[in-house]
Amino acid sequence: MYPFFFDPSMVLLIPAIILAFWAQNKVKSTYRYYKREASNSGLSGAEVARKILDQQGLNNVKVVSTKGELSDHYDPRKKTIRLSETNYHGSSVSSLGVAAHEVGHAAQHAEGYLALKFRHVLLLPANFGSTLAFPIFIAGFIFSSVNFLMDIGIYLFLGALAFQLITLPVEFDASKRALATLRSSGIMAESEIAGARKVLNAAALTYVAAATMALAHLLRLIVLRGARD
Image 1: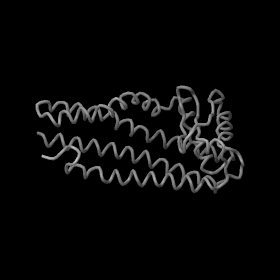
Image 2 (image 1 turned 45 degrees about the vertical axis):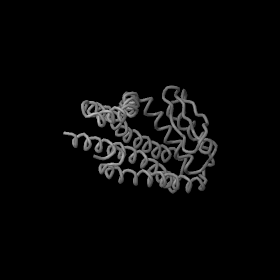
Image 3 (image 1 turned 120 degrees about the horizontal axis):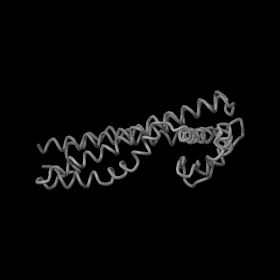
Image 4 (image 1 turned 60 degrees about the vertical axis):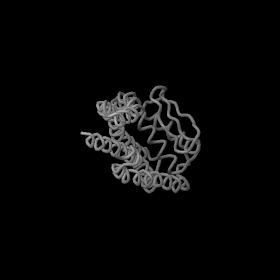
């Protein structure tokens, strides 16, 4: 009998942990590399976001600055794009690529993009599941008389995994929209778009890593549950 956190099933998490560390390093190094490359347009991330939003008729979406590095996101409740200070004021290839990506999310929201709707529906169950799944599972693991708690923990964690999986097409689509818009609008030259693509692809790896980690955790729970039968 092994302690829950130090049993042989831990080996299932190793590839996911390695991928997560690599993805984080990749996105930071790529982002910082292209942060040093100024865009020929001279426009800031905020100006690019505003320009694309207005071109797409999304005049009701605000663009504001927020603290932190790579803290950029779109807030659908307030219809607000929040760009980190560096990307809000900066005119680098990284800044413009990230700004256009967040506009992609605003466009998804405006048109009712199906995957984004599903992600919003799954947000509450995912938060609930990720918070309670492990405590409930561990309770069932410790007290053999209530094995059904392990099953409940697994089902709860499925919500967290589903959220991570549905996030992938949402993020990939936002990046696709961003690159297409930067090209068609002439905001960035083709050589600059290649750099923006690398930044956005590196960022997408972090979502792939998160989904892989969630899947690895689920497999581990299933293995532990099976060992009790």
